[in-house]
Image (cartoon, rainbow, N blue to C red; front, top):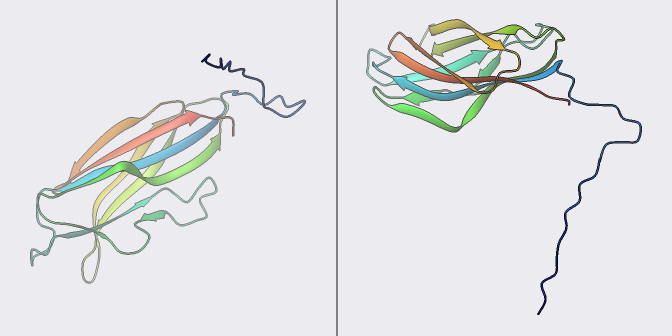
Length: 157
């Protein structure tokens, strides 16, 4: 029996007259949660920590409220327990048009839920350089260690 020979051919699948190419001025920005570790107990009653995050200023216009993760409820973590997300949980995504490149600042806040008032464990600005691939950032504050992945890749969409 003879084997049938398969030849792959590639063709341009863009629309007729479409001049869209990667021009280097549209970026897809993404922040992801990689892991959280609590090095101390959060409550006086040693119930563990109830964590939630708020990320972003609400888009380019800044009129929307920051995105909360998880949208409802909390992440429950005991002392010396590690919460790992595989793949990274998306905290913030945005398409942005910027011809000159540079970087943008995205606010990140981590809260611990308590009766009465929530404690702010982390309040920082994450600087994302436009055009960078995955970059892993680590923050340690108030007995908590959090790892975040940040990227801003060039896209044509």
